[in-house]
Length: 234
Image (cartoon, rainbow, N blue to C red; front, side, top):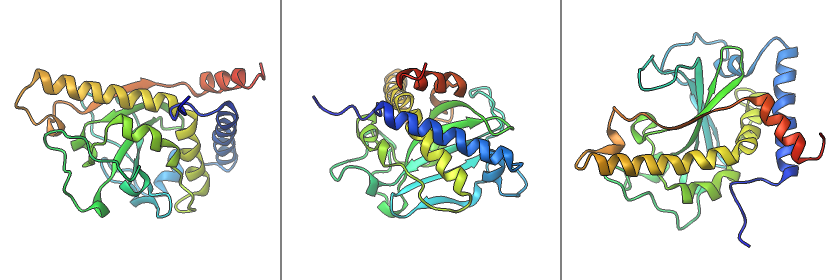
């Protein structure tokens, strides 16, 4: 039976859950939280990346940043969110960008990113939702869900800048919510295909009317209870 890349085994889920809780606990005990760690003392300005220059792991080819968008009638309002990415070197060697009009398949690979998911946060540093976006939002190169899902385990922020607890937390979140992320990527592909069919001749990937392509609210306490149940702890 082929491996189910979208579903970590229960032990990995339990480890990820413990990591998420511990990082938030230690930061809270120290008078900080996940959002404050990302801001690093900078004033919070819409659309600016925090930390400046993003966080990149040169070995795992993972990347993320935190920011906020201006209010929009087409998007749920959040305090801010993390955008997470993999670079092509983290994808299968035969991976190719999706064949979609407007997808920049010929760009320099050194500048290419594939967006995985965004993690919405409240002002207290708690995760509230996951969502995917259209290509224009992050200037990514779109790869199909079937390419990205097997690569999800490759996302790891094994660097200390700007915050070791923050980097460990976001790595663990990507494991803890991998099934949801996989489902959102599949839904994104469906939405892009449907939108393209309904608006023939439109550059769908650069259509400002289509910003968020899939979204799911999350509740961390509920997720932790599910993991405890899977691990036989309840």
